[in-house]
Length: 100
Figure 1 (cartoon, helix red, strand yellow):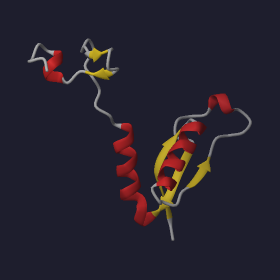
Figure 2 (figure 1 turned 90 degrees about the vertical axis):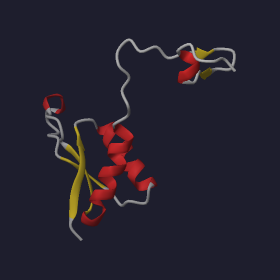
Figure 3 (figure 1 turned 180 degrees about the vertical axis):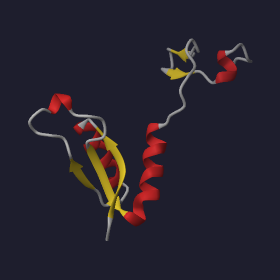
Figure 4 (figure 1 turned 60 degrees about the vertical axis):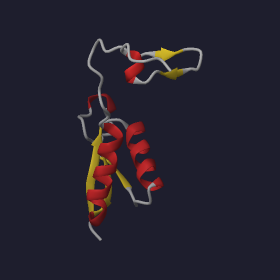
């Protein structure tokens, strides 16, 4: 069974988090560390690779992309919060809509 790269990072904690996340989803994983041990400060991006069996690559890549690509809010967008209930206020109430 050939193993393929589904994610690469320069940060060891991130690599372990991704590996744990995929294993929790039932996907077998391996870490391949290509960082030179002599000079860890000068390592380039992508030296720690997360490998999965070839048939799992599409599933693993999709899971990773859904976890990492969240909707980004435009700068300056206000998020209304009801501090009494400790919750975000729905968008229609936050922008002057009817209060319930």
